[in-house]
Amino acid sequence: QLQLQESGPGLVKPSETLSLTCSVSGYSISSGYYWGWIRQPPGKRLEWIGRIYYGRSAHYNPSLKSRVSISIDTSTNALSLTLSSVTAADTAVYYCVRLKGVIVAYEYWGQGTLVTVSS
Amino acid sequence: DIQMTQSPSSLSASVGDRVTITCQASQDIYNYLNWYQQKPGKAPKLLIYDASTVEAGVPSRFRGSGSGTDFTLTISNLQPEDFATYYCQQYDNLVSFGGGTRVEIK
Image (cartoon, rainbow over all chains, first blue to last red; front, side, top):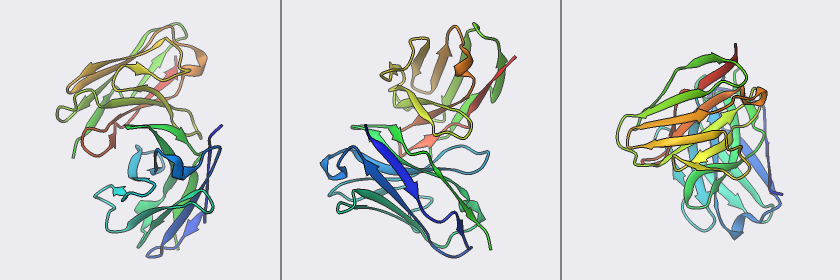
């Protein structure tokens, strides 16, 4: 059974870099599928951050593109997210996801991790 | 950017009711539309993809319809476990989500 588990600091200072890891179990990331990140600010709608397929370039939300990077670490079978120059607007629950084949639907989700940006 | 507008933003219903939620796209998105259910403190769950295809394991009382700019999620015979917030999501041009519809117990 595929499982996704996000981890990382729950508190990040403004202007610093947010770094999260998604540990994947039950499937090898390098075997296929798109993987990605979605976030949800408190009380607000979901926001797509980006997605990646092993061996290919990542695709990012244009509104975040200058600050975001998503990568795959096959040695740990994990997905990572970095978001630089964070502000309070980046406070959100961050979800790791796996897409449903070629359809851009989010079939598997991690439980989410709350990241608060505050000094 | 494609804007997704859901209505209503919230509704009250009783067990056994039929509920209809609409999602309107700011431009033609063909059938590139998915629906999710989210319960408090939990990750969203995929219900419907490509506007009308029910995800495996999702009860048959959930039905999706529509194409172009106007889409509908219908829940027949509402059950206690269906009280949640529902989101639509388009993927014709990048990805964007609707604002959500909260289904509450009357």
